[in-house]
Structures are given as structure tokens and as C-alpha cells.
Image 1 (cartoon, rainbow, N blue to C red):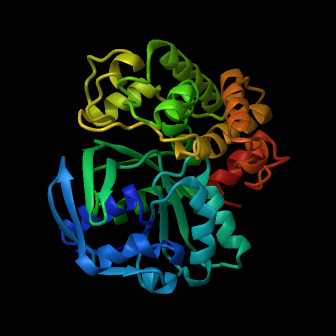
Image 2 (image 1 turned 30 degrees about the vertical axis):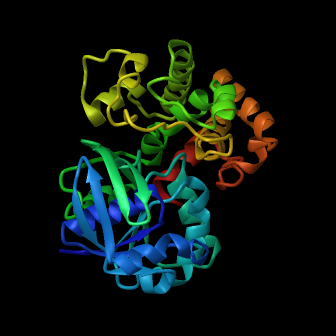
Length: 367
């Protein structure tokens, strides 16, 4: 079995670590020193228990806040944090990255792999690394205790892209020992970025239930109860706008419903509303799933790191994004933060002022 470094200590990072540890891989789990409290119980226990769709114990051989210790000599590094952590972790990894290493963002949100690579370079890293991203998280999961993760489901396939784009097949070969026959190679970063489903579902689902979230403190089922027909029509509008953006950049992007069928099956559920109002992997009978307040990553991640860059790309390509723009405005007012300024913009990505052709060259080559 192989060594792998996993960066992060939240729901998904812990699930990746336990799942792969159970299968005999040697896991190095890392997070920043400020998250030591997340790591200590795992270190003391020697791993994590798994419940739900998979069960058992996943040993984790190394749990550390030392970045060099985490990635030294490891070929594959999985970055499993919310999008607002991508730049921070790139800064922490930059002094210790090695030639030939592969950093995969799980997922990248919009253009996360480009931001991660840009940050490595800005921090003086000149190593020949490959940075890639997945279209989504592999698992629907939660960390439900200090040393326990609950896996609701595992996606049946997963799109992946890399920078440089021509390395995607060789990266899949390196990832196959960990997740056999899972990955679908994509031509470039835009294919996985536009496929990021959270930015389609979460902002509309949260903002159009804003009163309910604040009144109940999230005591309801986000998908089964919150995604009503009217909310789902807004989700479908965001879905169409991001597909229009993809088409303007040469990417044929499947619909949210098509992606949901590919991930989890149930083709008989023939609308977004029908799929999510009874989705077994998104909600559970015995617990609420809605955000507890408006500081949830459903807004603070998926608006600035998903909707904002899509709106910016709409401006560059001439594609109208009225529903996306409206959700950005509502979120900014509600949280008293201008996400168009603080989010992942073309300027922050180093793409401002480029033509569409130059933009495509940058995401394909990284140069």
C-alpha cells in the first residue's frame, strides 16, 4: 500500500483519512497549528472509527501540525479543506514542496487549482509540481465525534483536471491505488470548476430560507424540507447560467440533475426537486442538516469562491448571470461583506485583463 498526505481536519479530510487508512494505506494527516484541538483526539486514538455506508476502524499513522513532516517524500497530497483554506495551505506547503509532487484539491470550487498554483509560485516555490482539482468531494460525510466519521454515500465517478492539463492521465494512475476506477479525466480546469455542485445548490437553498435558518438555528432538513419547488427553480436558473458560461469557454457541462444521477443513481427522479426531496445521501431521518446561521460555508464559501468567480467570468465572456448576481448581492447585504471584493476574483486569480484565448491558455498550462 502507498503513502498519502491529507491536509485538513474537518468532515471530509477525516473521512478520507479513515477510509484510506482502513484499506491499508499509510496516512499523514496535517492541519495548521490553530486546529490542534481537532487533531489531538485522533492522534491519541490512533485513527478514526467509520459508521454509516462504510464501517470499521481506519488507522492514521501520522497526525501532525508540521508541514514539512506531513509532505516530505510523499507523492500524492490531497488538499481537503473549504475553498477559503486553499491559499493558506499553499502558503504553508510552498517551502517544502518537492519536484514531482501532486497536489489535488477536493474539490477546487471555482479555479481553486489555479489559485493554489499561483500561491505556490508567489511564495517562491519553483518546484515542478502538478496541481489538480476534483469536481466535488468524493464522500457525502460528516465528522460526528472527535474520532468518528459518518459516511452517507460515496460518489460513483469523479471528474478531475490538472495544471498542466496534459498530466491528468498520469495523475489518475497515481490516484488509482487509493480510489480505483473512480476518476474521469477532464480537458482542463474549467470542466471541473463549472461542475462544482455546491455553488449551485447551497447559496440559493440557504438565502431563500434565510428567515428559517435564523429563526430555527438550522433545525430542519436542508434538502428534504428546504429545497421546495420555488427554491429549486432558482437552483435550476443558477445551473443554466453556469452551463452557459461553460459553453462560452468551450466546455460542455452536464446539468446538476445529470451529475446527481451519475454520482448516486436514481434516474427515475426526473427533476432537481424530486431528486433532492428524497435523496438518501444528502439528508438523514434522525438529524437536521441546515446551516445554523448565515456564517455557514454554504454562504461564506460557496458565494465568494463559487458564484463570484462565475459572475466575473460572465463579465469577461459577455454571458449574463442575473440570478447569480442577485444571490451575491443578497448574501453580501445579509452578511455585511462585499463578496465581490473579498471573493475569488479574476484579479486575485491573476486573470484580469486577459482575453478569452489567453484565459484558456493560462488554465491549461499554468503560465
